[in-house]
Length: 308
Image (tube, rainbow, N blue to C red; front, side, top):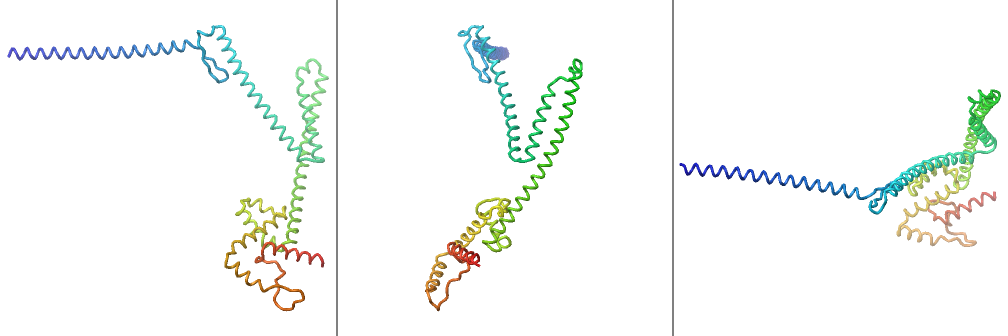
C-alpha cells in the first residue's frame, strides 16, 4: 500500500510540474508576440519619422529627412498648401467664367431670334439694366449724410430707370408673343402651300397616301412620327418618300415567276407607227409600273395638263 501511495504522489507532482511548464511556455509566447508587435510599431514609427510627406494639390510625395533640412521641408510644406489654395481658387474662377459664358450664350441665342422692334426694345432693356447697376454701386446711404442733393438725384434716377426697365420688359414680352404668333402663321402658310404642291403631282396624297408614307418612313428609316407628320413643310421629300415606298412594294411583290410572266405578256404589245391593231400600253401611271415607267407616265400627264 505504501508503494501505491508513493506512486500516486509522484504522479501528482509530475502533473503539477507539467502544468507549470506549459503555463510558463504560454506566457513566454505571449511576451514574445507582444515584444514583436512593439518592435514592428517602433519600426513603423521610425520609418515614418525618417520621411517628410508633402501634399502638392492632392499628389502626395515623401522625401527622406536625412536628405532635406528642416527649413527646406517647412518651405516645401508651405508651398504645397499655397498650391492647393491656388488650385481651389482657379477652379472657382473657371466655374464662374463658365457660368458667365453660358449666360452670354443664352443672350446671344435670344438676340439671334429677334428682329425689328423686338430687338430694339431688348437692346434698350439691356442698356437700362447696365445703367441701374452702375448707379447702385454708389453708397447712397452714406451720400445722404455728406451730399443730400446728389443722393436724391441718384435715388430718383434709379427709380426712373427701374420703371423704364420694367416697362421695356413688358413691351419685349408682348413683341415676342406677336413674333411667335407670326411665326406660327408663316409655318401654317408654308404647310398649306406644301400640301397643294404635293397634290398637284400626286392627286389624293394627303387623304389616301400620306398615312401610308408616314408609316413607311417611320418603320423603314426610323424617322420619328412627329417629324414625318411635318411632310407638308417638305413637299419634295414627301414625293420622294412616296416613290420609294412604291418601289419597295413592287420589290416585295416581284419574284422570278411573276417577272417572267410579265415579260411574256408585254412582248407582243408593241405599238407601231400607223398601226391600227393590237392593244397599246396604258398611259396612266399605276402601282404595277416600274419606277422609271411610273415617272415617265406621270411627267407626260403633267405635260398634257400644262398644254391645256
